[in-house]
Amino acid sequence: MRLLFMALWLAQSWGTRPPRVVSRVEPAWTEEAHRAAVNTTIVVKLMVSDKGTPEDIRVVRGAGFGLDEMAIQAIETWRFEPAFKEGKPFQAPTRVELHFGISDKARTGQTARLNFSLSPGVQRPELIQGQVPANPDPPVDARLRIRLNISPDGRPIDFQTLESSDREWAVQAIWEMAAWRFRPALRDGKPEEVSGLFELMVSPPKETESLQNRRQGMVTILQPEPDDKSLPAPRLISPLDHALFDGYPRRLTCKWEASAGALSYLLEWDYMYQDAWNAEYRGIPGAAFIVNGTEFTFDFVGSQPGRWRVWPVNASGQRGNSSEWRTFRYLH
Image 1 (spheres, rainbow, N blue to C red):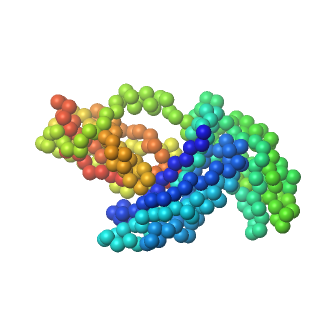
Image 2 (cartoon, rainbow, N blue to C red; image 1 turned 180 degrees about the vertical axis):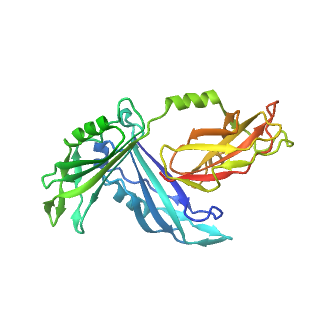
Image 3 (cartoon, rainbow, N blue to C red; image 1 turned 135 degrees about the vertical axis):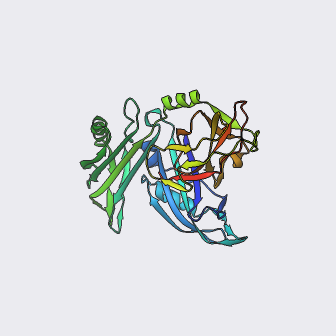
């Protein structure tokens, strides 16, 4: 089964009202990507005009396998409600993430990319035989970057490992990739050797972390008003508001100062879904971790904006005044 998700945010100040997608079609899934069992993410930047039309669409982090072209073709047909500032529409830069995936236990949590360095007028190679290498066994967080050439007869040659978190896995991956076959790159209809870069990142679900989350406890925030208004709001320490993170895994550590009279705390978190906060968009209660101290670490859900705040809880289990929301964003 093919899955596709979209995340959208405005590359402006957080105080502006971002564009909203009002009409869109999903990018087509290429046969090449389907054959290769690709799970990947494409990052696209564009301008949304004051009339809501997409302009200057550019792929800034491509995935290859023909999906980049499909992403651009689809976004060209999208229509937006434009960004507004002081009640007036204005042209605004926007960033879109398109996530593609195939349900495959051997490749759960993968992000794969295959991009080529092409001279003007050269048509890229197309993978016609072979699949993305499977995850390490047992599945763990892993990274792999391999440079390779595609010969004029469509064979991958001259493998060079640039980065690997697991040497044995890298050797196995190269052995699998050596069996790949391509429709070669073409210049004026003639085959030509080209260089490419294959990148594979794996982040399988963390069973141990899920167990820890269950031990810590998860609750819902049914209503946003405090039960005990005399209990002061915690002062947040880190991360700072509007923090940007480029690391992986997306492990966030939140810290705050103790509140007088608090026995425990609720760390409430949320993420952006279709340019709105998920809990608000879906009209559902907020989600929060039960924390006994003044620090908590958890894995965030994706490369998208998020926010967090803290509620103090007294000995009777009543929530006090919450802190302010702080926002953050994971870029990858």
